[in-house]
Image (cartoon, rainbow, N blue to C red):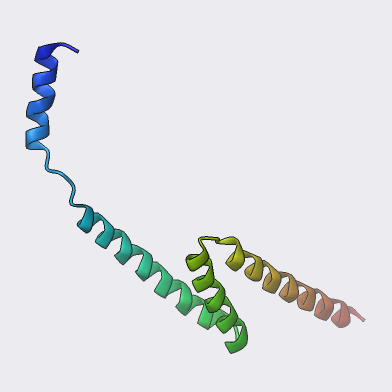
Length: 95
């Protein structure tokens, strides 16, 4: 790299402020927490008390264990259960 180019880069570095890691973490935390609150509210509106409690527990455990599959597995299990109930009620209505 030429000395002139290196000097230009050094000058640019002086004018570009460093990102404050604390502000970045704070901003990301705000976004994640707001999204989690919205998700919990949606779960509570969509599912009964027992299922909502189970999903909330799975959500927290997924975050703690850094494994989103714990939550996803339960959502899919509930979907399969609901689909089965819906299909059975459709079959019963046709008879």
